[in-house]
Length: 209
Ligand SMILES: [Ca+2]
Image (cartoon, rainbow, N blue to C red; front, side, top):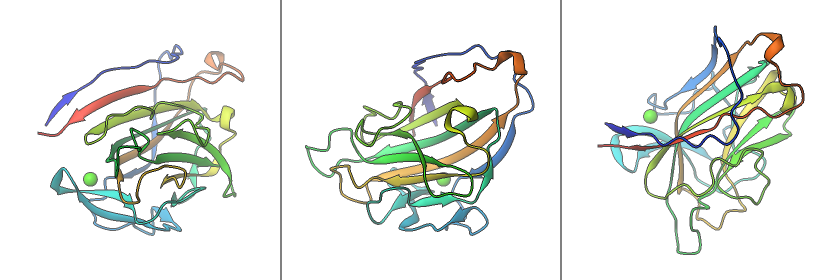
């Protein structure tokens, strides 16, 4: 596997001595299904073979959705810093799709099914972080998001949900996620940037040999 990384740092905040990152969720989908211990109300989410690598299993969606389609079980996202990383692959069903292949992430507030669109492949729908825009189709991309939980008011009981958004011009089943990892990183209080979105966005491209 050759990994080529190109970093796009939109807004970097100094993070000194980040330690004790706690992983609260991982799924590489190699189990072949959406485990009830990890996923809540999976909707049309389904585990399928990676279109680029038949030996790998990934998440996709049988239908377009809105407001979330594959929800994690409630997680402790008290932070203060929350990190979400994953791989994303999109194909376009027609020339009008461009790079708006439909993948979106939403962070649901604790004990709720409403929340904030965190990132998506289109400006439409209001992604809070825009780092999934303009991703080339037909290849995997590794995405890392870091945000302060206070900005989104996430906390213990929050869910992260994935979907192929119904606002995308793409046909269902053309968006794929893999290697999802969600963790929280305690930081010294003196480094908190109160009320300011602290974003460290690393978009990289991963080419599978
Ligand atoms: Ca996988």
